[in-house]
Length: 114
Image (cartoon, rainbow, N blue to C red; front, side, top):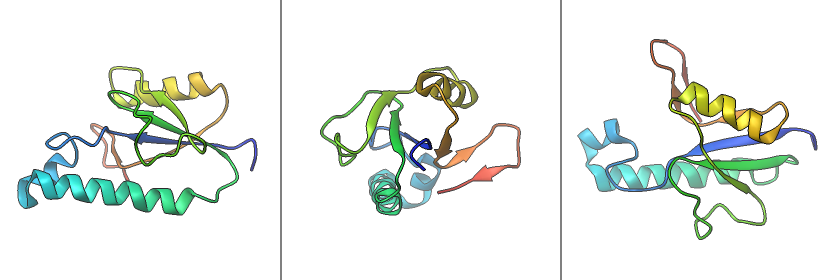
């Protein structure tokens, strides 16, 4: 799997900017805690995968967050919409990629989850 690259799209964990639909029912602080727990869960699942791991941040790269700098390559998301961001991540990496995250593609019934 050494040629395999895993890309994780993340939002910077800022209250009222993550899990906004969930926040409507449980509040923005609890939604932030849920988001942080989901990230922790993903890190646990992918920790031992033998592949390159890239974390793409929506706003700014955080070198002090739980995504360990020696285990994850950190990059900035580029593009105006999700499709463009996904495409640009592949261009930046320069090879085939696997992307995980919670996505909802506009105009589509396709829903991908962690």
